[in-house]
Image (cartoon, rainbow, N blue to C red; front, side, top):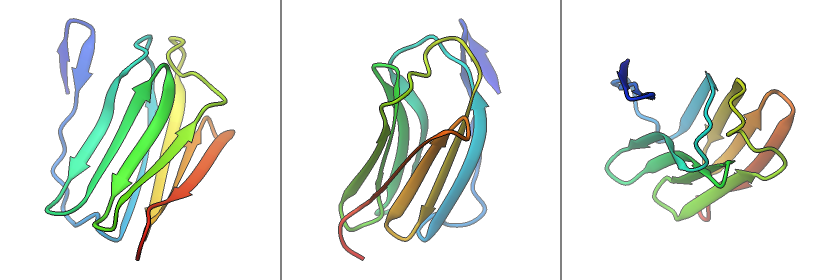
Length: 110
């Protein structure tokens, strides 16, 4: 992990494709209201977890169009630790924050 002026960056090499499923869980803490938290992409697919006005958004496209899952009931830019979980199977995704706030959505197609 690299730390630059209060920012951090972690890079991982995936050992298998995320085309059919993706499962990520981590803790985060920030006071920033906007920014990219996680980004991954392949030849036709991508997944982006980002903060917009303190709210967590998960955008994804697995070749059939973009899906979006947003949790509006909590802002995570409060400087406290938050647990973030992402589950994606097929064209559906679930986002969970602090094992309490949950949202689900689907991309078109498949």
